[in-house]
Image 1 (tube, rainbow over the protein chains, first blue to last red):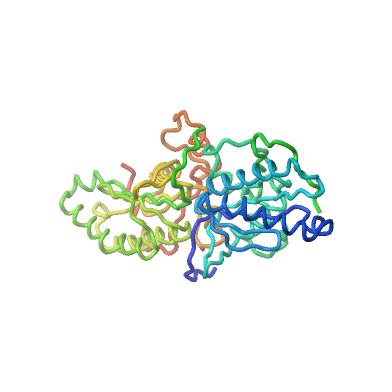
Image 2: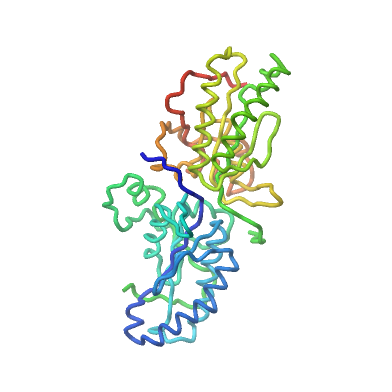
Length: 199
Length: 199
């Protein structure tokens, strides 16, 4: 096993994307883009900054964010989901933007501002397991916030993540072992359901 | 549960102390102190610096060290134990200095350079579980290095840590649950046994 020296750090990695983004774009391309940009400017970016997160990259409808603390990452995610639920109350269901959020804790590799490794991959793999408007944590992330935050938690059990066929022992264990996604957190006092079917 | 805003970060916490320190001091007070200071100056401090650790505090015979990466913390610990084993080869057994090292990963609280929280307490509680000259990891720490370092690992199973009677749910779970100390790592190619009886 190679032990080449690389820059590593423990981090909580948050992956987020918009549920049903393609469908929303199909319904109203310009309206969806405008609404998504407003969400980012008015809600996501300020919340991430408030909780000391660092946006590593954004995609069309998603973001990858790094936090030094798992507690900060989960607080940020819950704040975002609570605020999004409020924001969606007066919007017709078929136009609502709802985020799925996945959080993992990992000993990641950092290189020129970007981040790499199992820790990042697992965050991206558990994010699609979250119901729209909720947050899904890996067991590694959950162990670091348990007893520190007051949350409604549903144990999702062990989950099979994408790419389980990867011929890499360290990945295989994280996908099927105790570190696999096991917990889905629901914001307390969510004012109204904002679930879309998965697309 | 209070959610007061504090500075938190994920860290690997390394706790180390000298096995049988009181006995060694009883045999030769000044000689032990001189040997221990030499160990620190020539070996511990440079290894910790090399692996980007930060010495949070030292006690008479111990140290508490913080690392940004669990992989770095474990590499540092294994380097120290390998070097100590070499150093002990020509020293009579009753005068050998051998460290126990415990490592945990936790979302710790930082305040004016000091560190606090379960993450720190668990590191201190698993350190005495290590045989002299070896390293004991909590499950949280082990999950972050699994597949990333090539090590001989012995699963110690779930361990009952000191102060299990603490009336704090989050502590109780870490002491008896899957995060409790489970792994003991032995340096590969350790040149000679350097075990003392526990005192």
